[in-house]
Image 1 (cartoon, rainbow, N blue to C red):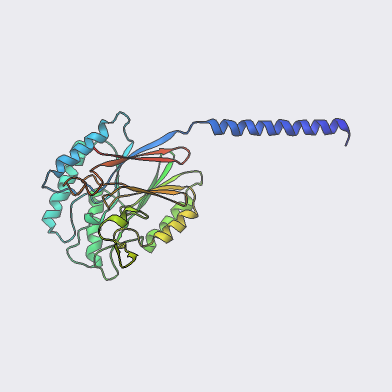
Image 2: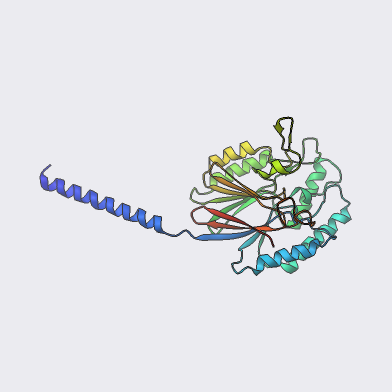
Length: 306
């Protein structure tokens, strides 16, 4: 190689390197964009007494009066006060009141997640549980108890946390095998550049579960499988294989916390009903969360006392 060829090659290499650095610098300086704003309303616990309907109205008005309005509402479950073990007429009244308020006071699209209090189950059998869950699905206008969709550059997965025990008695929190297999396939089919938000009623992973009741005794912490998913390890291992899973939202505990684990932010947001419409529940006032989702996969979760 002569000196002239060497100079040409070095010059071409430096030019390419400069061009690559320029592209990288431009990409780094591009401001991230908010793609989606969600209002996460969970644990409304609608009932005919103690002003629950008025409280839910106030919450919906607050959400829609924001200057920077959400794009949609995510109902995190436990929309009604209690279906389990109640008379059918009582459950019908609760659902009717919830639906009436939502239809008359809300103009935003709603995605719904099934909570344990939404499932009518007067007899503890699997058949009864399935029928009660179907009733809740009908009220929420859900074709499936778990589902996913794409919205504004994010992939949203809504799960069904609430499963009957093997003998058909009242619930535990986990994903049944059918649902877990579906979730595996759904995450696998989602493009790696698309960030993913997961919604469940019961927390997949939370810290506040350790402070709800007497959870420590005899040198051991104890968290019931009704408080937090019993398959946390299985689900977090799955998320680890899909780094574009960025955030998981839940309710159920009526307390607020944030746990960051292995690249995923887990937000447990407080209840619209607070302490079931009797003020604060421990440190958490009645409220909802504004969840801002950005183009770089980041998230800001802000709890709002309405």
